[in-house]
Length: 248
Image (cartoon, rainbow, N blue to C red; front, side, top):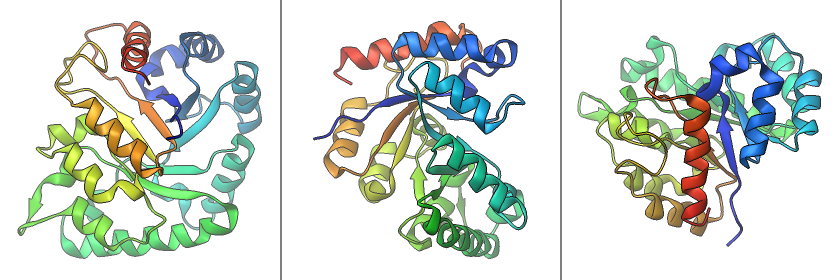
């Protein structure tokens, strides 16, 4: 089995990035992370970001962007920006309310994202969707997450956020088993959210890693941390240390 590298979702350390982006990237590299996933660009151009990441030996594991940036006149700008970053994975972290409140909206979301996926093929890029908790609530007996991934085309990435899924009452292991071939990137978020770091909650990480590593589809593990009660940099460092202790 090929080893899956570990990245950090920069939303975890957004305040630090706002104060000193390059200094924060340096610390992330020194911790041993191999890549980062963006959730904002801190006023920097793609070229500036790429130069900083290259300087500290980090790759881009993806970016979180709104669906609007992948439509109409914004599409080409987004593709160009991410081409410079050498990023393949364009992840939509949430959808506007009209796409998720009823089945009509679900069908529209599928139509729009399928169109984006087809347009991205010639650039060797992928669009994906990242869950919060709302995607697992039943509407007329059906769950958006299942309906969506049962119907979008096979190239659309399922970026499962493990902690968010559990917060929504779902079992991340069952989801991964069902859609493992879609899981090119996965967010390692602990549950409960009050946990100090990844590896210190109740998620069965061994089972999750076994699924990801046996399918051969997962390209990045991405740590995300959002507990305001502990310092972010210390907690993402501890998360990586805990992952290394279990052989990641």
